[in-house]
Image (cartoon, rainbow, N blue to C red; front, side, top):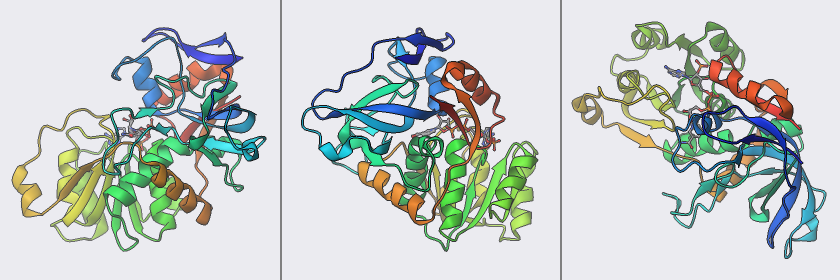
Length: 336
Ligand SMILES: NC(=O)c1ccc[n+]([C@@H]2O[C@H](COP(=O)([O-])OP(=O)(O)OC[C@H]3O[C@@H](n4cnc5c(N)ncnc54)[C@H](OP(=O)(O)O)[C@@H]3O)[C@@H](O)[C@H]2O)c1
């Protein structure tokens, strides 16, 4: 089969012909129609992820058709259109994953390939309102965003929500889930055009984080109290800008972050956190129950993940470079 393979950390992805996997007991083989990129793939390629194993078929997200069953898998899965929960072996504790937790696409071979073998327990039937490409764009970003917003930040539709870096794959799904639930949503982005697009989708407003006074200007725009406006803030940047989120949070607010793309947070004034009784929360991926709840929400509101651009599998390296450029609004998808 054809697959986009990372032979060594730091090298470009290469299209190679490798052996087709065979499903073990409890597993299925999927003929993939589409896969999607996540920032994780870039971190792995750059060697900025723990315990990287190569050669590696990368990719955590995919959708396709079940074409072969391992022993013990229900016959009803055969020929089903499916997507895959990439969060494997979470374990029994919803608060924290087990020592065996892993994400599809490292160390196990991932979705940048014609075929994938995976345990049947991680399959979900593709919602009928989604194409294969849209379904592939959903799992990792949707799960991360769902746990951040609902399970960790305790979101309810009455909350005023700020999502930073709204052009990102996870962030945009958080925006879509919060808007569909009826909340007032604001965003930051490094692009005026992206802010305008999110407002067309129903966000109330936004501000460009490249503007040095963005946090003050945003508070003015909300016409909220000087003590802070947002009950829920979802962030993936971290870095020096994170301290301003503390100023923007309403007293008692919840700030949840799942990434640190802008680096370490070194400038938090403790008194600003404790006098405002803020909750600062970290999150990663999610449980099987959260994956099911996320799919139910997406299906109920007929939310469609936004695909910025599609590349054929053969151009997986170009797709990664495009992600690195940060131009995208939403997800980057590989057609297979
Ligand atoms: N913990 C987890 O389980 C988990 C899961 C998924 C992702 N992540 C992490 O979350 C981050 C985003 O992942 P992704 O897949 O959504 O990546 P992505 O699609 O490449 O999005 C990255 C986004 O970061 C935003 N950004 C850049 N600089 C920023 C700044 N100074 N302030 C605020 N936002 C800024 C950009 O928003 P604009 O384009 O709007 O400027 C960009 O779209 C990555 O670090 C990734 O590793 C973690």
